[in-house]
Length: 406
Ligand code: 1QQ
Image (cartoon, rainbow, N blue to C red; front, side):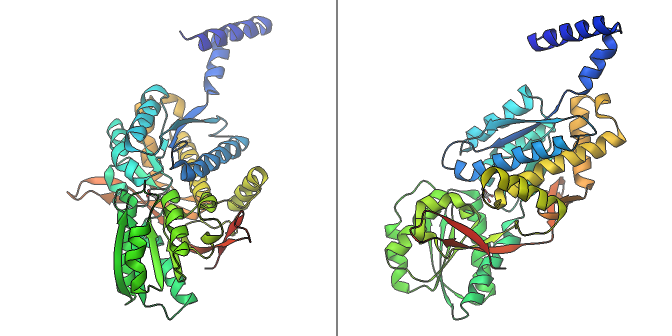
């Protein structure tokens, strides 16, 4: 018996003695209000924390929000956080800790697709549902039956930013593309961007590669600038992407810039400062979306952070919401207290798959996918609304914001 449960038993016995009721009855009640533990495995450290920090905030707001509304039929949830850092090994460790030590019912995470391809198979084999809050590469739900995402795939989201660049300047013809070749999401996203360039009958002048750990992009930029691009499209992560934008401008590039999902955070502002101004980024969430749950989330976020909620926070909130509502639906069908952990996890997978959820992202649901060999896989997101935002920096470049333009 652990120290915690020993002391809990002593308190229960003391209360029972005072009330002169059977201790076992009170113990059963104490057991019932044990929180349901949901794991959150995102990047709280490393460069990837520029993206992961926003997920922590979104998940914490969801925990408070749903517990204030009674949790899962009166039983509170508790989020168990495990830091993945920025790489695959960190994500695998965090998943193992949450699955085996925290005994979570499911996991929200990890931050990067690159990490998901390494860590998700572990959860899938253990029969633990995973909801990806920000994994947008092709093939994520196909990792396994227990894998879902609330982050719409790049193939659907990314083209909107290129179309918006053309709306703003219909003369654009010549396009250069940059991407981080050591990151699965960036490779997937650049494939979509390059296909979009072809579909829109633009001229793809050049494709330059870099690493997410790079800080100096002079070689790639000086290769491209003589070709006189009118649009540069970047697929990378926040620090490298922000530096690339900064150096493009410093070396004289004046045309349009489309950034991918890895640049989709105000945490790039300190990197490119006023030179971030004008970057177009497609969005799977808008704080302006008018619904009861989004208005409540927006208010809760603003009360804490004194700014509008960003996409990664909105998606993390939505992921926790899916867990809470699917658990509630399951509890209504089969009381959770009657299920062992393995059964609960397996049943939760089925509830997530068949649920409909009214989230800050709008109404969402999931559709079954298959692996390449035809065997059943996880749930791909079905979402209706997408947007485009443009970064607007204040003079001096210390502050700025995402302005929705579409
Ligand atoms: C992915 C992404 C990241 C840029 C989100 C943080 O979309 O890795 O799939």
